[in-house]
Image (cartoon, rainbow, N blue to C red):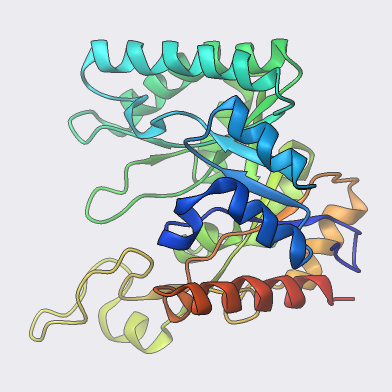
Length: 296
């Protein structure tokens, strides 16, 4: 299935529910049955990738191996992780993979600038290896979690420098949900960097305006506990299905189409109202598919 606006193929990112983790080929069979064109995957080998392709489903992105360890403060861990990814890129490119995915997470023992410098140093050989096989590494601007927010490349300021310092093999995974929770205009960001967008995640963010008024962006309640910390929410925001948050998806698709984006749009299901059971997760994926497909 494709979007009416832009004719972009629609896929989804493999989630962590047990039914999605049991069998990647089983997941591919279901994806094909309900009209998804591609899957974004992680922790799979070349044989599993070929199995997905035999089901008639393409590969969107493959996660870099243990990308959370790329900026480790332990040099041996970092070097081992880089070497493993150089080997993986070579092997999986032979199976037709052309887009790899990563978030860059700094180490809290380093300053922000030192983490950024480390990120450019570590990613340069990885992106060069991708470029040599006509592939790209799509970096997502996940800002991280409180209190340190160690994400690298999640703001326009840092994205500009990353793209300058790594001129080959680096692209952006555009995900408006992370920009919205940071207070960054997702449309302005897309207009500035659309030529570097290599992949798109379809995920929205709902803002809790009352909590923003009551506590601001950086502190929660001093006098009464708020709901426990959650993986997919903060005290001022919740990740949502597209259309359940504040992102203007019609405008997003229009900007992508107007600037010649030729990739896919991938649903990333992190709306807690649609997690926890196979039925709920399938409902969330299909509802997201239908919403993004029918915009015009």
